[in-house]
Length: 182
Image (cartoon, rainbow, N blue to C red; front, side, top):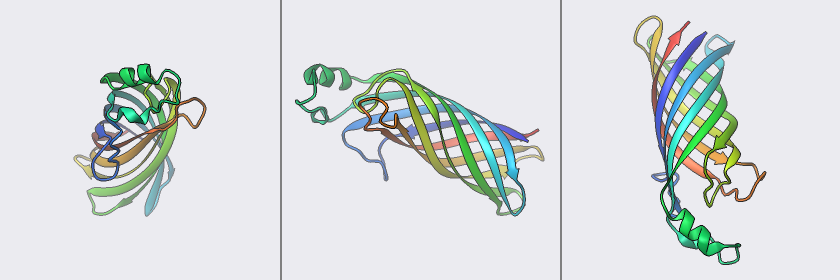
């Protein structure tokens, strides 16, 4: 029914996610494929979002790694250095939208999906994990088939206790994009 493209910038910190232990910024690129589930006063779509993330991480509070952990000094040295991380994510979202005006729709979404993270941090093991997200946004009609999209979301990266460590990474994002009716 629709497909889209979104670019976003995310940051651990700010109003809701101000964790002083680490910094994490992320630039994300998403392809969106919409599958309508219900159309009416409220539309419900299943949205597949293959995502590529380019992130930067650094442990700020080296005391986060306790002396009781094996090789804690080596881990402190490794994680307090800034590192670049790549995220490969396949999110699936449920998106509920409602027309506000003839040209503007508001929506909320919630989703999750598997993820591969390229490097370990003190909070998350390298390899398989999950990316959960929740957010709200607005689309504005540009033409009969093209919409501008702006949204804010919260992302949580975790491996669901499948590996250690699993303290998780939390990111607030602002995303801009376009979607096209097919």
